[in-house]
Length: 353
Image 1: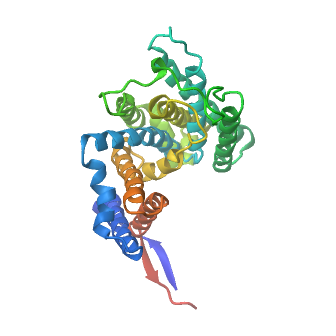
Image 2: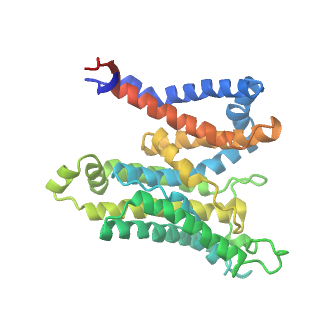
Image 3: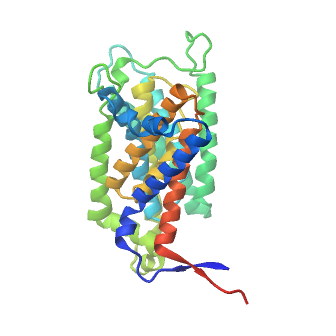
């Protein structure tokens, strides 16, 4: 039978190149997939890897989709480095959108444009409160953060549906499940007229710098990473696992809530049942493909955004199913995990007794 055993010295070059190898495998499998569906593989690959970079408008849409992925993945990278598995960033994204929408709907025509800052802060608070439930249950009752955070996603979706179908429904909205359209003062300022790109991209880049400093240049970041890599050593050094738990989950929830606020106060402009876009789950792949490093997450988020846009284009122009986006995302993660497994371990035949 075959058995996996650790390699004495895994290749550093292959370890660094693992995401690129995984991407190459994803492309090869994608070509086979296009051919099996009777589509031109070159045309299919063009939808995913050329069209999203073809024009200024395409680049602005790419940045718009990459921004929430970067923010959520940054928060998740802190959790994963601390050995905390926050799988419910999608729910924290939704709560951020709800809190931001609640503030935006209270604005009046006389309100100054500064209100959009309050909208974003409210989104962060919403995400942090939702993540705090996970932290509290893990801290007090040792509940699994995986199950709790994941189940809270569905609670968040139900809460959103209740609000847009009930008390927050626009009375002049022809009975559609949606809130009023937010006033311009509450909207995130756009960078270029005629494009949807807004200042959220700068917020994401500032967050990348901030998280890089936090993780690799501060004692608090060092404590988190030691607690994740070697819990026994962290306890011996006197590092507080409880503090690490709350810090990681609140940071993660705050970033997901900020992403939700940027989405509803940016391109959407109102709350609808379609606020959940799957960014919270896709950001898990972004974090791991980016090697849990803030700079790597930027490139990973851009790639994942290309998959989103490419999937939409393949659906409209080539008649391919919408699920193709998820297929490419899953292929990338599967290929990355396989590459990491065989880079750090080797397959050996062991004769059965």
